[in-house]
Length: 141
Image (tube, rainbow, N blue to C red; front, side, top):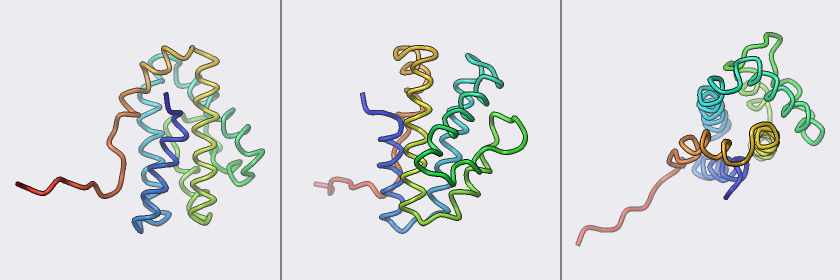
């Protein structure tokens, strides 16, 4: 099983490589976090989602200090605009590295909280979303 962070990092890297820039990176990141919150809030509650996200940010900020800005003053689980704003101020490579670390940290915390099997079942639909970037089609015969 590929970790959420690793998959996210690969998608964000493709966005950057295809000229998407930091706006595309932050847009994709916010959309992914929003889908993650929608999947988890019915199971762990809004407070649980907020606490888990804040803890993941706190832990990931050890290696990427600018992530400390990714948690807003309000305890709102589905508002990831502070993350987008903070990431938008970073070079694309730094934003991708920190966002990837944040997803990996969040994934590890969630597995610890609810187990690998339930984490997989809850997040699989999010992970199965097609990746960003150009796709190659076979030529017509």
